[in-house]
Length: 477
Image (cartoon, rainbow, N blue to C red; front, side, top):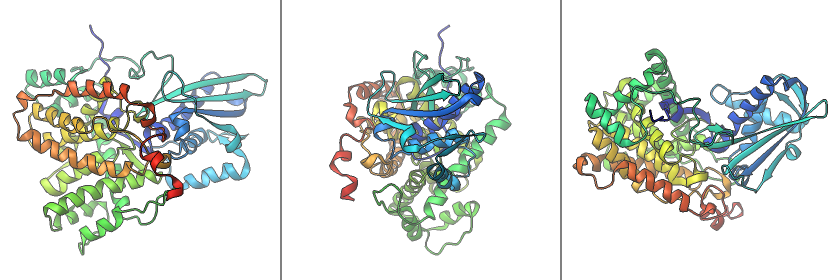
């Protein structure tokens, strides 16, 4: 039987701390895994000193992506899902001031951030996002371990022959899917929408209660990131002096409407005057708010990455606040099931790493995910869902990743808003078309995206060595 990688929706939609899933969340997880390795080999108590080497894209944009900070937080034993992010600055400050690091919260060792973290411009052969942890033991021996952050918070070891085969095994879902055509075939055979097919696969991994708890937690973080972004003034950190725009935009849109918390916020938004221009502004505001939180080392949901975290929640909020005031948790669940599945198709057939494929792999995929989820909620057929996802990606093909100053701010934040608007537009076009006669199948656009990624010059793949990143510098700002 042909083995098909089975990726859970909850692998595509993960809670993490910004600003980047591949450069922040991935290294954070790698540090946690290295500590687990040391303990498994009974070497944790023998560690005297440690050194971290960052390679390729992790080095070139590591400072702006907070790779060094995330790695340290992982070594300290913090978890990105549960950590109180308000103490990040103080935790890193302690290391700088004392020259000591409390390894996994258990053992105090000497550590100088400037000397013990090295940024290497060299690219490792296996993947652009490579990092190596080295430890000197009390007995004079040394041990090291290398990890590769392949996008979306996924971390692999080199011995895995194919980075996309990250899963522990190839456990067979009741409806294993590698290509969109297979997904569509299951929908026809079972006479079910895409969300129900994906739900059956998730049920092979966990109970309905666990599924609902996970989705509710994901939506809670999405909603909170939008809310926080819309209620936070100031300038983003990093040196670009980017002013937060979601706050003032939200203030103008909400007007005199009153509310006190996230629970009352959606009903309040629904009461505001809604015209075409206001709709565009609301969607833009939602997307900007999430990625301003992301850029500030805030907690967001990778969808499929941190850098593209604003697109999916912005489109879901559009549906709940504009299209359907009676939307319920079940609508949120269906949207996420479809969005997660679309994202997994791109991960299997191409990449969700900007260091591998440019921004088309992040904003392009997030727009495709959002377009597919919205189309099903709007009553679209499985064919229309796949067509909407294809349209959204088709108009992101070739999009480069060229963050100014290595920061996930310009042009990254605005691209989330553009991706959200394109997703809504793609859903509308698909539902006004004969999707059974689509000229470009989703599988073909995924293949094309991967070919485009391989042809793209490396300087446009999250290195800050091309495009806007070299036309505009921190000194210009």
